[in-house]
Image 1 (tube, helix red, strand yellow):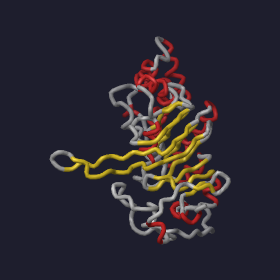
Image 2 (cartoon, one colour; image 1 turned 90 degrees about the vertical axis):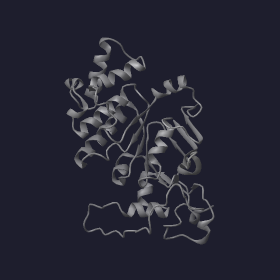
Image 3 (cartoon, one colour; image 1 turned 90 degrees about the horizontal axis):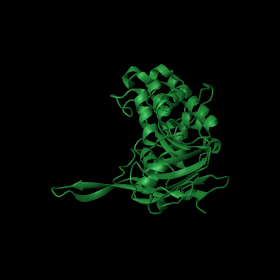
Image 4 (cartoon, one colour; image 1 turned 30 degrees about the horizontal axis):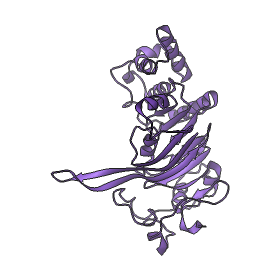
Length: 319
């Protein structure tokens, strides 16, 4: 359904009286992956690694510096405004913060109705019926259409965001950390809702998160991102059972195990993640990698197939 190739976003750093470009923040730096119809691809990594930027580039909410995004055979990055409006019906986003993504001056019904009117999907009484059906679908009452966002809890507001995304009957949804701002008990409800909607409507997800337990529960495949690059991508069970990249190993070692009898060795990484405006040469992870060798400082590794659709960008697995 979706093929991303060499996707790049460099934000210029401007300084001085004349705002001259003094450098670039390499938020996303040559990311490539594919998403199959009906699956969920989890995108994980530390805060600031470029996950959210990658999701917004795919939807053209941000303009890419370079690269290609092909959705159902159509090039998204080259689409005109008219073509992009048609694509918007197929591709939607659920934002991380369910409060700031909703207009506080509009009722829930007005927000969802606006989507239907803009895309000319319903008119007159059809709009009210469609809004009511969407609220039913996400577990809210139809009377909630008359209320404002501040009258809802965080979990309910996220359900409203999901209903708004579903209003245009999309095929593909970018879920940008949709549960990170919610209580743990509410997180489970939203995850179960997303899974039920996927099964019922045949949706495809790019699920962006930093909670590895949540990602394991919902994802078919997982891509691990570090400092603007994908360093490993594999089927969910294979990645959690046998991570290959040293960064993925460190992430997995931090996932808590519910059995108190099982003890797991925690991998502690040295230092902090480098600034995306000063990305190290060679492998971007070599400054913190416990398994780094001299060549890691100079050689940039591409994703290499290790069999079973397990790809890793590490010199240990070269060729």
